[in-house]
Each structure stands twice: as structure tokens, then as C-alpha cells.
Image (cartoon, rainbow, N blue to C red; front, side, top):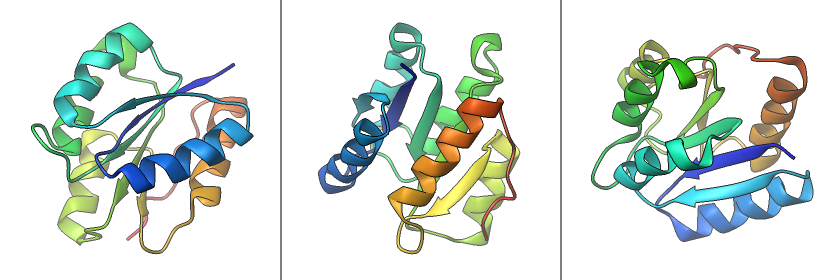
Length: 131
């Protein structure tokens, strides 16, 4: 069973994604802020990460940058979620190593989970970054 680490501070978003991920056979671990997400990475060793941009304590871009400098996480697929679909955030996420950026207000959990399935079944599959 593949494990997804979701770093998201909104409990409604977490619950919605948990339902979709579990229904597709994923194990799910959660962190509610960037600091907790970074701490969980080593213990959980996720197969993929879903991270919000706007997080308490440490933002999602910093989490992504910290992941990508560690050899163990350089090839782990990372999907970034944001409500702030501002081109500068999208470019920062791309530069930090995001495989894809989804706009929470426009993109459904079905699309996110579908991409995760494809990435984990076929290997890391970089996608065009939304924006």
C-alpha cells in the first residue's frame, strides 16, 4: 500500500482528501503545519506528498525546498495545493521541485488523486504546472 503524506492545515480539506485517498487504496498520514510535515517525513517515508502553500509555522514552498535537498526525497512526487493561484507562488513551487500545482478552488480531489495514482503506478511523471 502506498502512503501519502498530506500537509494541510484546513480540517475540511484534509477530511475530503482523506476520503478520496482511502477509497483509492492509499494509506494517509497528515501534518497540520509545515514544521510538523518536515518532522513526519523521516518517520513516515511517504511514497508521495501533497502540500499546501499557505501553512502555519513553515510554508509549503520551504517544506518542498527542504525535501528536495535531501537525497531520499529528491524523486518523491510532490503535488502542491493552493488557494492563492498567484503566478509567483506557482513559479516558486515549480522552482522548488513541485511535480504539479493544483488550485484548490478549481481542481477537484478526483484530479489530484488521479494524478497521484498515475505518478505512483508509472514512476514520477512530471506534469505541466497549472497557471
